Amino acid sequence: MTPPPTAPTGVRATDYHTAGEPFRIVDLTTDPVAPAPGDTVAERCATVIGAGGSGTAPRRGPLDDVRRLLVQEPRGHAGMYGGFVVPPDDDGAHFGVLFWHKDGWSTACGHGTIALGAWAVDTGRVAAPADGDVEVRIDVPSGRVAATVHRTAGRTTGVTFRNVPARVGARKVPVATTLGVAEVDIAHAGACYASVAARDLGLTVDRARLPELVRVGREIRSALATYPATWHPDGPLLSGVYGVILHEELRDTPFGPHQRNVTVFADGQVDRSPCGSGTSARLALLAEDGRLGAGEDLLHESVVGTVFTGRALAGGVTEVTGTAYRTGEHLFTVDPHDALAAGFTL
Image (cartoon, rainbow, N blue to C red; front, top):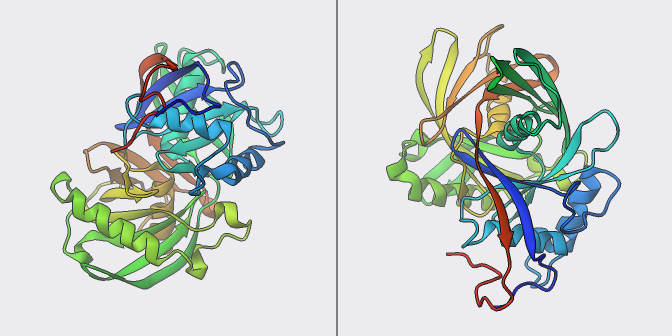
């Protein structure tokens, strides 16, 4: 293999993890390694997808070449996730972001928004007090979101992600799988999520069952490809099932419901965190069911045991709180003599 023709010779990145899920940040506003055409973040996202970011064309745009360079081995892995920082839509936000994963691009990412809030404060891009909170406003393809960064004694102790409004699309949609018929709930929360109780398919949400969970998640996503309730009124960019959430009930806490989930997104990628925008989708469903009373929280656990805390507010607005930690700084390079310079996947 040879490097993609549009691959840069070097890409600077900062890595975080949010509740175990990686988030690799490349700031195109300070290091424009590839163009991201468009006047808004949504337009930029549509442009990179149109250039082949979610299709099967052998040649893709230059920004997608950078994505593949960072997500594929040996620089990345099958669970890698990240974002390109771009200009905001207007002065109301601090910056914008294009989210990406191993198969292409996404319109929402709660865990990434939490990481970006911490990154913005860590780098001094957004000034923050030693004690107290500061709001970082971010334009994403699905709209404007906010990350409120919580600080104590000069240290970031948590970040609360406020999502675009979430709404329920459909309930108890029957979907045939190799493990039986699943009753699926559909909700939009910046991206479209399908939720199913794992026990209805004879599964539990734990690491030992991951191969089955991933297989059935892919089956459900494929089966709902043309289902009307997955369509978003704002058009195709926000339409179609992005992730499948397989969840199980745990004992309620004194503050509200407690659930464990695994979110299978893209083409079988597993979210190590409880999934930020997926948590928003779960909150919308629980609120409609009357499971979340005033002042109650959802304790949402991941397949690796990390947690987010979520709450439903008025008008479909949701908030999800978690933690993010920086794991590294990188300068990724491309050697033109390297036979594996373009990367590979297993």
